[in-house]
Image (cartoon, rainbow, N blue to C red; front, side):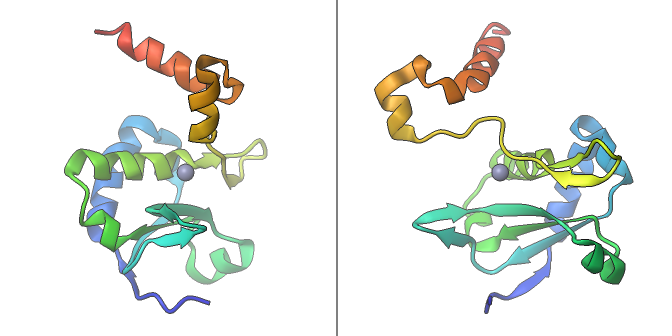
Length: 141
Ligand SMILES: [Zn+2]
């Protein structure tokens, strides 16, 4: 149960409308609802700034949205424009088309505990994709 206040996030939608044609073209066909909640969610001390979720068939039949992206307004207020763009880009990356042409959410490319990275560095296998992306990025400079 949530006692959080929720309302439409127009400024989030405006950012998404710039990002979708540029990086998430498949989402031009998706109906996405953007919402603010007054406080970001937190679980076990970890704060979730934003969350994308796929609507269940029942919910979609009620409100027509394929995905809901909900953003914690308290944290949002502390972010600069680039950070806000990165947060929304991140959430849009979770929203994909599945193998059966169905909308799905996908997990992160990379998930690792910071302490494992501290102990094993580049040998932390779970961060391989991330390291490759960083190397690709630094070769641009
Ligand atoms: Zn995520």
